[in-house]
Image (cartoon, rainbow, N blue to C red):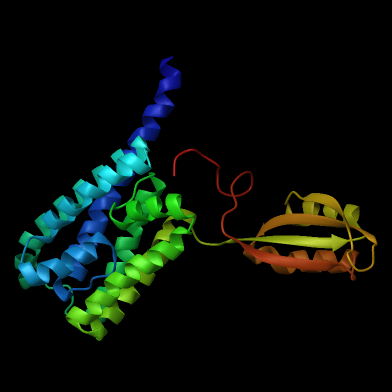
Length: 296
């Protein structure tokens, strides 16, 4: 029984570690690089920057308060306790990090400044915030805010999350442009773009793999050669040409990027008339590639 429980406990500890690191990273990136220049790059944090500009209310407190009604809505419309509890922890840690950062970082940065370049700030705000967000996504959590709104709207309307985030975050960036000037809005868009790219990179990793589909009349010879010369397994299935009606075999093989040239040479040597499609594979998990596992 203990042996069965141990992997579960380790998985939960791993998730907790990802949530803590991700939320703290996102909070530091926000406090260090976004707040000093009013880079309101979407989300509840962007709304908090806008409100702070007019009222002076603490950004960390507003971020926390605005998330409370969203969690209530999330409970009624989503009902996913694991997601909501994980996200609540992330929101609390982000708010705490932001509060501490906004209180003490100005004094620290006055002595040891990092940069006074707004472009660098926009870039690193996106990269650090995106890395933090990606770690949270791996743990099954989010930064709350528009992520909860987006999921509720998706459930009710069927719209894709990307469309919802585009509209919601776009409206916040537009408001930032009106309040702070359009140059700040452009920096906010850059931060938003880099944040998404960094989060994707953390979740999916670099695209090192390629998947080739070879449509051929010599499947056995090509299969043997790919296994022998590239050390890669293959899968294949029968197909029929839509125009000619002739029978063909589709051979599929996933390889590393440096092996693309060798694959083309192997195919050309056994079937010069083969039709080859090679595409980027976002992730390859399993034997010969990244280990398939439950954690992150």
